Image 1 (cartoon, protein in one colour):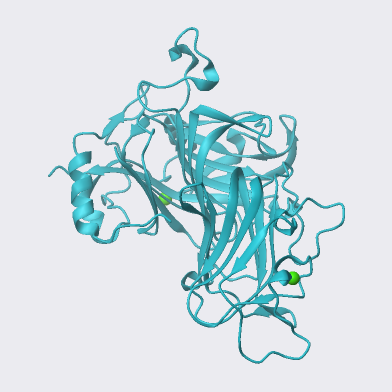
Image 2 (image 1 turned 30 degrees about the vertical axis):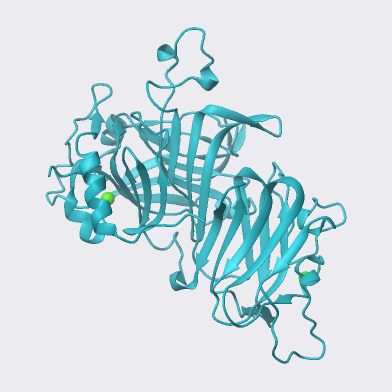
Length: 455
Ligand SMILES: [Ca+2]
Ligand SMILES: [Ca+2]
């Protein structure tokens, strides 16, 4: 398991020393200046970083309080289809008004696809700093609400005789850092992709990637649908829930490119995908069993974890750490993990697990796939704005939600200038695509970029 240190002050000071000489903001093309700020915003903002906010100074901002022409001066727009998502994306789906940028989903045939949306990126390129965006999500499942940084491979700069797909910048690799690929209602997905050292997964060349998903809000059904599949021999569920709880079904499926995994509230149909956890060669172990009295018609059995019957459950012990571990006889490539927890009371569900982590074993360590903590209850990221942040420096990538660190990773290859992207997409890897998506929008209040203040 990855552990985070606790001594924030000394770590921050060390990071800043390493950073101060290295930040570069490169003006690419004639548009924009490094320290430009909208004239109408007289107050110079500080980042949402609590007591660390005074360590940074603003270098670039867009508050989206200008005109459409101002937008075009600083941002480029995709105008065309995209193979990996269900929408083509156009300038017409992007608008500014009343200090807000909107990327809007529309159900319309264009560019050979059945939906349209918006996708823009800065004309300027940036390297290192603290990147922050305040926005809210389109209010529908199957939408991807993204604030991210990605290098653009310039064909004119690729050395002759090198393969475009595996080309490299001067240092590190071509990369993508997804500060957040937000999913309605309240999931934050972070990802770090390497676009130089591609690997083959199921016959397709994919980037090496390192994804973490954070889900806020309480619900009985938990679906962890992976944009990039993982291959592993072991997965586990770990919880510090203060009481006993029920897990009614736990499933792990291979990759379904259409994203149409079975409904966890229902048994998997006989022609459905293979659940690796139901394979007789899969070994299952649990932390314990509830020892208190149970109604006469309720049985507590480890086999209930995947008997394809959501009505039956394994009931954990009441005390201490709870876990379920699945070990496969051979490595499995997993595209989706899902589980059902709690119990049904009329139309409502109760007894939900207040916190958990789902992890896979990479051969050396347990690596987190998804986590949840009840303390963040009642979250709707399409109703409320949230601030998503990334500190990107020579050695680390540190992800923030409203100034709170949610993830820290080593920066192994992100060492070249890149634009900042704002993208909305309609996708197959988060819930069902329905007409409810038509007219929904991702709304962005601002993008701000900071560098460390000189010592
Ligand atoms: Ca069951
Ligand atoms: Ca604004």
